[in-house]
Structure formats: structure tokens, C-alpha cells
Amino acid sequence: MRLLMTASQIRGLPVVTVRGGEDVAEVRDVIFSPEAGRLVGVTLNKRGFLAGRSRDVLPAEAIHAVGQHAVMVLDASSLIAPGDAPDDVAHPAVERNVIGDDVLTEGGSSLGKVTDLVLLVGSSGEVVGYQIEKTGGGRGYIPLPAQLAVSGAALVVPNITEEFVKDDLVGLGASVDEFRARLGLS
Amino acid sequence: MTESFKRSAGRKVLSRSSAKELGSVSHLLVDAQQRRIAAVVIGRGKKAKLVDWEQLSGFGPDAVMVVDEGALRPPADEREQAATEGKLELVGKRALSEGGTELGKLDDVTFDTDTGALEELLIGDRHVQAGALMGSGSYAAVLDDSEVPSP
Amino acid sequence: MGVIGWVVLLVIVVVVASVAFVVIRRRRRGGRVIAVKEKE
Image (cartoon, each protein chain N blue to C red):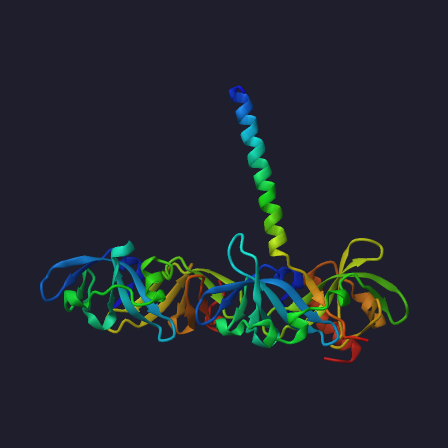
């Protein structure tokens, strides 16, 4: 049974140093690579009620763990200048965002539109599923294979995904292993 | 002897050489990496002073004895300044796991009065070995959650 | 203006300030989920 959270839930979380116990920043944008199926990095806001954007960014390699209440880094040096970070983190290409894209099975059924990403709580940054707005209406959660082909305006998923549309994260968490076993991967 | 942070709060601090009362304990500043008390904070606000643990001749149930009044000093850096303002106080501090999950609030911390070494962290009715402490600061005390029993 | 007039004015000011506060904070905090596709 895996503990899951959505990418939206990471926004606004404090970034806390393990050694210093300080909240050095707050998560602003959460950036993923859908092909690699993992978190690439986050942009930051300063901490404080009316504080604005921070210049620094946090690439995934520098993240110690993502939890339900905080994103952990070893110390404040994990936050780096955009010039030192991968381009995808420093200047995310918002126009190539898969949020809002259609999810189609290989057989051509539309499951819905991507509204959010679901990832494993912990240090892997691994995306295990998508939250979708179902074609027939309502919210659903689908598991993803470890690698995903992404191009054009739609994401293509294996046919058996259609059997694994769940209503909540708990349902998704319980089904990810079975889904992957069925695909013959693990 | 084992003592706790909560019980120590407000305890009188005396000079061993003169028997003069120097104030009372307001906070205990912890070195999280070494898991021991680094200094005792006496008094509050601008007049607060620190005494390094090594300058204590004893931490007793009725009084804390400092070798000499001269051992009292003002905060030497930002961290010590924050300690005098209570920002680093462990009692009541949010306990956060290394994985980013909140574990609760630290209700109390126990330590050895001979060495100043931390012994246990109390979260609700859970007792966590001090070895689980990875770091602490103004926002949270970060614990290695593989060492934390389930509630 | 009578007392009631001043009270009403005060309420309006408080409401407008609260709304402005929330809007400004939301805009400054921002925060999006971005899943960036590789270039084709």
C-alpha cells in the first residue's frame, strides 16, 4: 500500500532544512517530466504572509523528500540560482503543459482530461498516476506505467488503464502494483 | 540523573562562587547534531544571557549552579539571539519527520544532568530516543522517523 | 453623517480591504502544476 499525494498538494508547502529545522522557502510551481514520470523541480516563494516570489529554485536532485506537510532539503544551499539549474526548472515551458491534455487509450477511448498528477510520498519523486476529469463527468484517478509516450495534444495509455479508473487516491494506491503487474512490468 | 526541559523551566540559577542568584532558566539551547544541551538561557528579552553547559558545576533539582558569574555572556550569534527570543525552544516545537510528515508537537525533552546529553523526546504518549533527532530550528525539530513508534 | 453612516463606511472599508488582501495574496503566491512535454 503506497502513500500518495497530488502535485497540487505540494504547492504552498514549506521547504524545511533537515539540519537547521528552518522553513527557508515555500513551494510555488511544481514541475514534472511526464515522459520520465518524475518530479523535475519546484520554483519558490519566500516565506511570510505577503511575501512574493523567490529567485531561487529547487531541482529534484536537491530534494531530500516530499511529504504531506513539507518538502525537505538537507540545508539552505539546496536552493540554487536559476542560472545554475536545469532549464526545465528555471524556465518551465508552460505552453507544453500536459495539464488539460486528453488521455486516450491505445484502442482510442478517451478517458478524460488530465487535471493533476499523483506522486509517491517520499524521496523518489515518482509519478504513479494522473487525476483526470472523466469524459462522462466527475473526477477519477488512473495509474501510469513507468514510462509514458507523450506527444501532440493527448497522452496515450495502455488499454487496461480503462479498468483501473479509481475514485480516490486510496483506491489508486491500492491498484498501482496490480496495474503494473498486469502490464508485465514492475 | 534524568531531568526534563519542562521541569527545568524557571529554575533558579546561582553562582557557585558567590551563592548569588543570577536569574532563572528561560530556555535550554540544544546542539541537535550532538544531541546535547549547548547552553542555558537565563532571563528574557534584551537582558537575556547564556551560560555554556561546560560552565555549570551542577544542574540540580532545586537550582542550576554556574561556576562563576563571569560565565554569563550575551548571545554571540544569530542562532543564540534566536534562542534568547524563544524561537528555538524544543518544548511545543513542531516535530517533523525526515520524510516531511508532521508527527505532532514535542511535549517535553529529557536529558542527563551530568552530561547534558538528550535522552528522550516526548510526543504525546510516544517516547522517542534522542538519537532520532536530526536537526532543529525555529520551524521544526526534524526526526528520523524510522525510530519513531506509531501512535 | 450620523453614527450609522460612519459604521456602514467602516464596514465597507473592512470588507474591501479583506477582499483586496486575499486577491493580492493569491496573485503573489501563484503556484501551478506544470508537466513539461519534451520538444517534438
